[in-house]
Length: 177
View 1: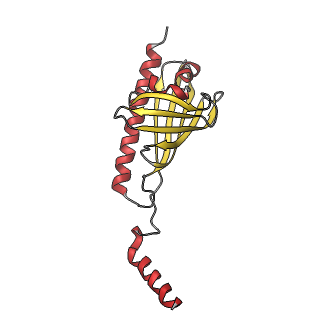
View 2 (view 1 turned 60 degrees about the vertical axis):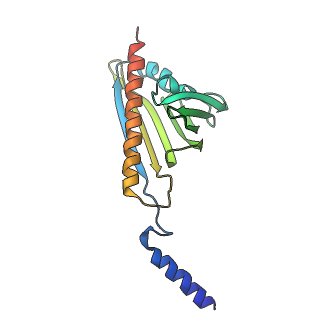
View 3 (view 1 turned 180 degrees about the horizontal axis):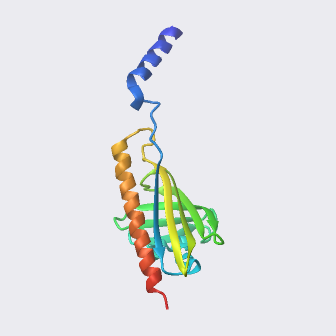
């Protein structure tokens, strides 16, 4: 009897094929950059405000801390997108000396799974800064390898990062004395 059950399970798993129980979404990655005509400390004063994303990111209607203190590892911000959906993001690394912060989804309605994003402001010389925004992630259904879905997700997140960086540039450069 045990052999028959084992054979039946093995046959069912094999019939599912590569998209079956052993398939898994591939990790995706994006990297967007922009040069801003302002010193790194000035750019970081805006970009490094974890709770203040809505002040410069045009796709977010509001941003507020719901746990912890701003800039403290472990704090959580709640973002309300322009379409009304909400997502919570947790700060998992914050280094103001290197102008770097890393965060991940903590709840709400995320766009992806296994999402880790890092925003870094670097000195580019001559009073300019290079801002890098990168992320690695998988599709929401991380058990399914779906290249078309992954391509749409990469395009969506890349486009959002590009819009955000352009807006950050405009805000910082427009605020210069």
